[in-house]
Image (tube, rainbow, N blue to C red; front, top):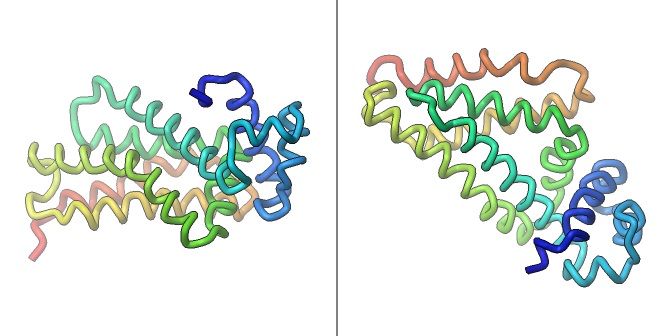
Amino acid sequence: MKKNKPKYKQIIEAAVIVIAQHGYHQAQVSKIAKQAGVADGTIYLYFKNKEDILISVFQEKMGEIVEKIEGELQGKKSASQKLAVLVDKHFEILSSDSNLAIVTQLELRQSSKDLRLKINAVLKRYLVVVDSILQEGIESGEFKEDLNYKLARQMIFGTLDEVVTTWVMNEQKYDLRSLSRQVHTLFIAGLSQGKSE
């Protein structure tokens, strides 16, 4: 399988750097090949075109993020603790790789409708993790029993996404992870206080 070939990962890592530095539209395949230290033609052994590279970058990196979050969730007892881990890991991973943050928050947004649909398909695995935390919280009584978890999931992902985007737009000048606790506190306030009418 192509994903297990060593040059595949090399090209993915190179694409993150080139797209972050030049923008998706200016990120020619030749620049990605040069950054990866491979011939231009080698790229096409692994990817159909530049759009395929962008989707593959997102699939690989989102897969890594989900795996790291799932690993950290092991052994956490409450839904609230799990949500705290999700927030902190999301911020930690993106703040530790500024090029990846630029690609996920800015460059993926400038894409076509077709590309956005593919991106949404990749996000499903992440959203399943959010759903499982919300369901656990409802079942344990930590969160409102009448919680609209689909809406809550959108709000959680949307908030994390917007906080990271704002940090990227502000040239990453402050510590993103320092916001984890405040964001978690706001989530818990909305998920667990009083029954909604």
